Picture 1 (cartoon, rainbow, N blue to C red):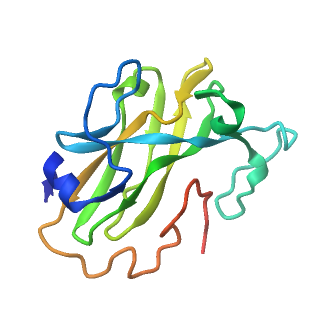
Picture 2 (picture 1 turned 120 degrees about the vertical axis):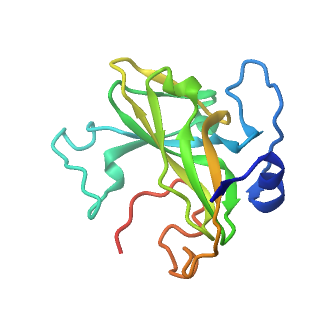
Length: 189
């Protein structure tokens, strides 16, 4: 298995909109890098809260409800960021739409700028032939509120090219998160 470099990413991976690597003052970096692609977080966030549930809800992936979150859209608020409360969690979506080839798997790691502030980004691997906007999981591990800037870099995607094409891709098995248009809550089939 090999890691794709910048020119291979641009040539082989469907990323819309695609951004070149360039210096953007006072911005958390994004775009293609030497061996990855730094995605941007979009403008819509769902932040965990217990305000609507009286503090007695349980997070259950088999019975997940939207009332566990408050929705914040920076396009609506007119701000360039959201605040994630201390020891809390938010879901967001990437600006970019990705189309992964059949012989590639993608692993996501958080950007050091946020990691050094105690913000951890998680995304499960993007399987071969997965398509859509990526739902990002952002954890604030600190005892302080933390800012996340919309339309700026949040995580890096690393593209692993397989030595052989898989027998069954995500598209072949009609994966439940295929072609997601944006921030998508957990589903169980």
